[in-house]
Image (cartoon, helix red, strand yellow):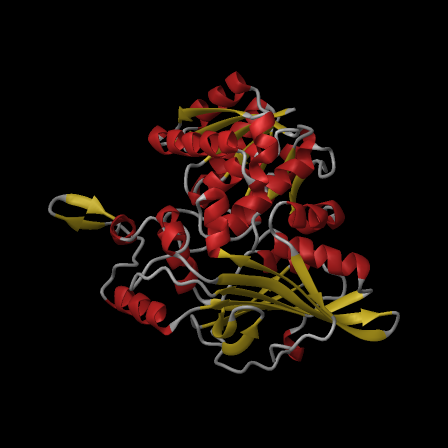
Length: 432
């Protein structure tokens, strides 16, 4: 059985710790480390309580519980993180902290000689911008060290890339277009709240929209294009935030408005999908959320630069985060379902193929099992599965890699076993 060091103590970390405890045949010992040890202790207590009760998915954990310990850690302190990794001697470090900390934790893993996994790519704290280039720069160092770094093993990114690899492996000779659809049909009852870390969520939503095309000559923009940037085999096409809107009817959720966003997996999928011509990412938002967000933007509360306030430097979005409900607290009051998936179009044996693969997840079922809402669940479960793939020797390619670069089949098999079953359609309604 393996030892894992889990850095982070938010809602996603709580789910990942719970799911590791449910799989004690793989995860024998887990160290949860974060800046606030009390949050780590709360996760530990909840996991141990559920394991002792042994209900449902916790049956195996009650018979052979994983050992869980906790520690205080500032993960931005590379020396301290390196020392803790060396002392604990894990087989894998799971970074489920803020994306700002990715590079510091990767540096610590290299120094300590331990492989690495995260759920979101690096984002500098002083710039609302995220891309893989900073972490891809570590490829040679991880490869030379004989270590594996698995980037973005959440749902999107993560499962969406596994879905893409699965589609490419089994149903397509070439994938020409990909639309990733992320729908949260849940209702938490608050006028405004974010389902994951408010800093990250708001920065992501407020950023310029973008999609990836192989050849801009084939693109017919429906709104004003603010910029085009060459990238690897194709181009980024940038628009104003929320400029492109669609309606879509989601299975078990219903009709929702969704908006085109920039998202990190587009970057790697544009490099790795054979024949790809266009990739887009859409996320659903209710009008109340968008109205509140626009008001906050208009009064400067989403700014990420420090301002002077009564002789102190504060960052408005960090202050806003302190005022908003903790995403980890939304579980008991969130009702409804999520639906996240991918719609592909391409060819197989010279014939056109359409394929839709998606997961539907129920907020209340997640809360009953692990005490979280479905947004944390759909990220924490794939993080555990990615770790399981590495520890079982299935995903061990040396260097720095995204999820579509590995064999998708064992991961797809685990999704259903671990609480995220998926559905397929070969006649999907297209986004347009």
